[in-house]
Image (tube, rainbow, N blue to C red; front, side, top):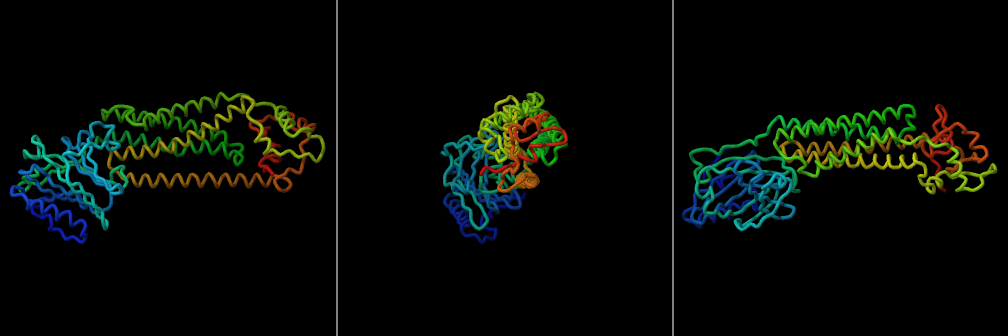
Length: 451
């Protein structure tokens, strides 16, 4: 990183709108007789800082230039950290420049706008792929800039115009009034590799649990007719593996917070994770406490109550109507309804939790978070595509087993024959008969359309 004197307008520029900012900055330098000459410093290959200090006016005139389109920010920080800093952030989409105090760790995730009595001539221009933030900082009598000596700044560049995680960040220490004798000292934000690894492991195992194991467990139950013999093993194994990975993920993040000497439960992500783990544990325990199966006689009573007397060869049972009218009555049916509802809730909340975790990690550590989000979104689309494809395959296979046309059953279900045909059959659900090798309901009653 190099510092150059008197070069505010020395760089070749093709963007007249951006050039106007430097023109105003140069004019302000001429207006005061006791202004030190202008300086520029290259913070990154695509990021420049230009400034002029006016001792007589107690002002610091600054332009932060980024060769790209994104939100940008510059701030004063005693230790080169976001916490305890005073930052000016330019938001191009809102055409707004904000003045923010970050007093606590919880403030890092968002901006807390304060009155900008010390700021003047705020300007943000974005044109032709370049962004420039300009402002005049009123120096207080006790300001370290006014007194001279090294001053520590922080900077940040977003991934795009929307305020969120930063693509680049850094800190540097410089004496704004005496840059000729020494170059600015670049400070790389100190990141403890141990607690960063702990948070990375937390995200890795959480992704395995919520992104792979849970979808496999849920899909194996919903698509059990494709694998009637193996689905239960996949369902139970998926839940157990997911729970183990979630526990490892929890242990990793707790150790990371301890190593970082930070406070627990500072973000909604933390509380949501504990809640999700509790619901998941309840779901697994409740799965082993399911009520016993009910006899088919209960089902024939329900069918008879809806359709009346089924005697006669031409009587046809519309199973879809039975599904709509009959509410869960037995303990097994009520348990199944709750089990399915919790499964949908867990997988939905898990996807939301994974996304919030990626964003939270990117705010703490500079990384290719935007790439992680792209991969995450692509994986979600892939997951939906696979689920729809498997469900369609199951539907087609079941349709091949139906008899008749227009979704009707050509063979009648007679009330006097039904108990005899399935005398030893027990039902796990209203549409499934589990009798070992044969499933009468799956071959005759499943997937009937309501006409």
